[in-house]
Image 1 (cartoon, helix red, strand yellow):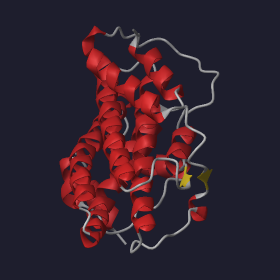
Image 2: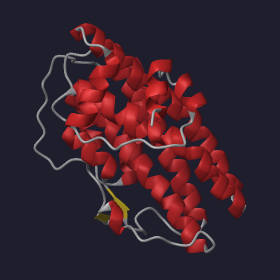
Image 3: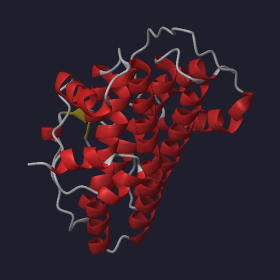
Image 4: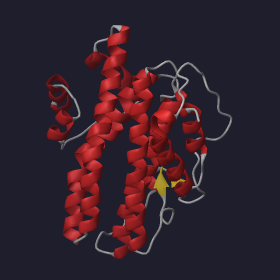
Length: 262
């Protein structure tokens, strides 16, 4: 199997369980996979492959449910599950879409895809233990919309998906864990511990390749990021920030100062 074309096959797969199986099988195959870094692959299928349920709606149209009810708790787990489903797709897309990167780039994003597949599986199993399943609630496609806006430019992708959208997860996770603690949901807290640990590494991978691309092209990372965020309408980041996790993921002190500036 060739890694990048196989990643495209997994990305186009609509069934979540099969997408997870294909993704994890790629990681297990590891260095037995061939890798064509120079191929400019074409895709004529709708991406990403996704099931008929959940229905994707605008983020403003996702119903708000009370966390005091079993359905409300399940809806929160479902929202996290949907984020991880999209994260699998984002990592697979980073592999197949962008040619002419070093081999280590593709191995890094294969690791990310595999870990996102694990996160999705853990959350889906927990959701099923609550009497629901993935697809039972509405969901929005905000994460994937940024993938579409950066499909033409690996530099923009590295800047605005792992370093912006996924880094927001570092900031948000402690507050979400506190909600589950208040609900007495210890399993959800444990799963989020795993996800937070791994996501630090995922954001670090985004930082590493953003820095590599900036260095290759003679760009200053901080002003380059600001230009890309403006050009692609990246969301404005707001407090609170998980500064410890962001430092561990490789953000510079200059970036953290700018992040906290009024």
